[in-house]
View 1 (cartoon, helix red, strand yellow):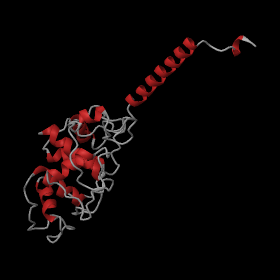
View 2: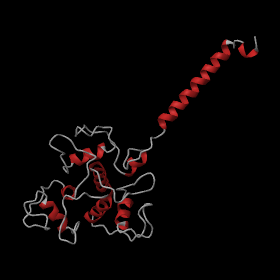
View 3: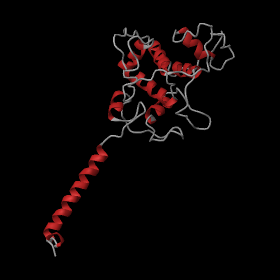
View 4: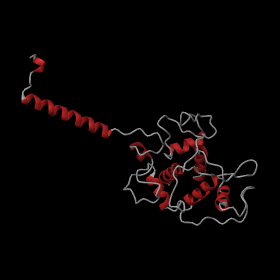
Length: 240
């Protein structure tokens, strides 16, 4: 029998077992402590929570398709609590659905005029928004506040979907902000000569948006309802 096949003393075996157990425990603790990489903006990492929504105890679930595990859970619940939206008739919020211009007008009006009923429309503000249009009131308010002046053809295009760069523009105008002239781009895909650089820079400076881990803002990407909830919540917390 060789020395490799000899039995180890019991004391040596107990030492090896204890060392192995300690190593496995340390590795498990390290794995639990490491934050998961978040691809989507607004993910509930420590940095995102600190820069945006104030951390608090999770309220009761408001919408059946927005569980507490949703990274925008607190923002979406806040949106409902302050009366900006009550969701859809089936009890859903549809967080991944995009936001069109007419819906954005209603949400922005309620954001800036908390507790007030939606305005009544008495005159068509754009060629494609008659007085009978269900969003005529908020769209008229958008035009009166110069948040949106429409397109050169005299239309508002209420059903067109809002991109992130236009969402930034609307929020800056709603705040009556005077964004600084862009000297350097706030994100790697928003250079200083980008048409919306100053307003995108303003929402970044106010921590309304943080962008993605790769340093991009993705300005032409369409806004989802859950991202809009986060933008609105941070807008209130960081500008008022």
